[in-house]
Length: 223
Ligand SMILES: Cc1cc2nc3c(=O)[nH]c(=O)nc-3n(C[C@H](O)[C@H](O)[C@H](O)COP(=O)(O)O)c2cc1C
Image (tube, rainbow, N blue to C red; front, top):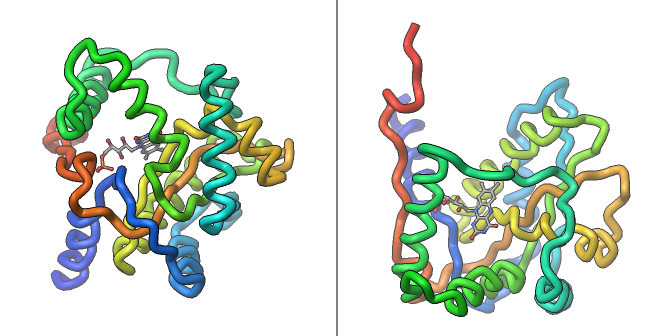
């Protein structure tokens, strides 16, 4: 039993959001194995609401080009509204991980060009050779989104188990009209996020930090 939890912790401890990838393509068989494993998560009524549009390197590059161009004109309305603001502890945690990234890549306070450049890295998928776009049927509402969240996590862990690095990215949902038209995703689906994936560039400055987690008493009310 304890071996199982050790194996799970090993995957969870090894995974992090990778923001610098090597160019090497991931073999089709490996991608299929990741998706098959991730599909084992539970979903309400076993509806399995997730659908993926998975891009090979050429398509990933084309999409990155289109998104980078479109992002210069500002954000579009996402299918599922972004949080209007982060307050209190959520604002604090957001700021902490943001500064961890900026410190790692050398963006100092007030460096608007630097932070803009780092933000734009989202639209080139941090150099990943592949991206999977995750969508859910609109009609399944918040619970479809919830099930897709479980799928996204499992995808990142399955990938980790196969030596593939990942990063989920809601940033691309702010450009969903471009993604929708290029990948022909139906109007009946909400585009939730991307998962960029490939092999980590271990030396990349953006990959040199790790985030932390709250203590149990911050997240559990014992009754
Ligand atoms: C749904 C979701 C959306 C995310 N969107 C972005 C994003 O757009 N850009 C980004 O750089 N990181 C994004 N992240 C990565 C988070 O910042 C990261 O998971 C968090 O800071 C914890 O760090 P870790 O993944 O390295 O453990 C996203 C993560 C999730 C789960």
